Image (tube, rainbow, N blue to C red; front, top):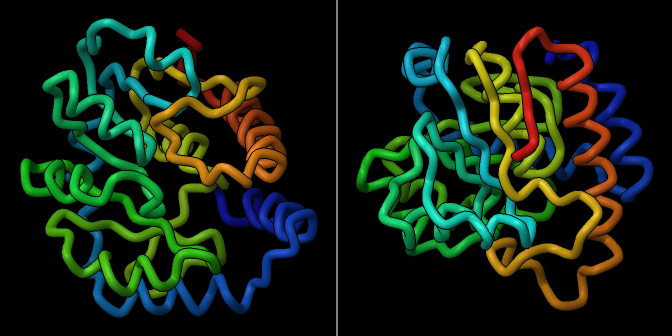
Amino acid sequence: MKQGVWLPFYEAISAEFGYLRERDLECAGLLNSFLEPPDLGRLESLILGQTVNVFGAGPSLEKLKSIPDGVNIACDGTSSFLLEKGVVPDIIVTDLDGRVDDLRGADEKGALIVLHAHGDNRDRVARLGPQFNNLYGTTQTEVFGNLLNFGGFTDGDRAVFLAEHFKPSLIRLYGMDFNSLPGRYSFTEPDAGEVKKKKLKWAKKLVEYVIENSDVEIVFV
């Protein structure tokens, strides 16, 4: 998604949730401080022309008995689900809400970690971010330094935006249950229910935008 298209979405989201751009920029600057220049060719070589599976943390994910062939992108906590199935995600899109030991373990086995900076995860970014080997950084503000911004708000829709950017032949969406309570791999705080519902409404809106405006085939499974 081009910056000029994404930033109005960002402004609307920030207004609804009361997010402060200054805090987002502060965390983004921190993340940028330990990033290497991003190797976009590595992401493109994984995704271009391939079938990509994006795993969201909705309850329907838990009904999946085996992991389908293709490039596997885990949305944060769903990396734990894939690892339990014996599959190392190719890419993990995260703001560090998932099981940190699983994220580290996947990183050590070659998963690419796409770490997102926002105003509410500065401490986790500072403490955990430098521990990853295969690290890319994203921001929801204007890009600067070694940061990227493919668009997106939640881990799930950011994963879809990232995959679509590199033009796979097909994107299959698993566990993208926008109208349901989060599944157990979302690791949502017990008191975050109403906020999570609002976030899922935005995630649905953004994924629908990608589907309507992309020439890549994107299907819910």
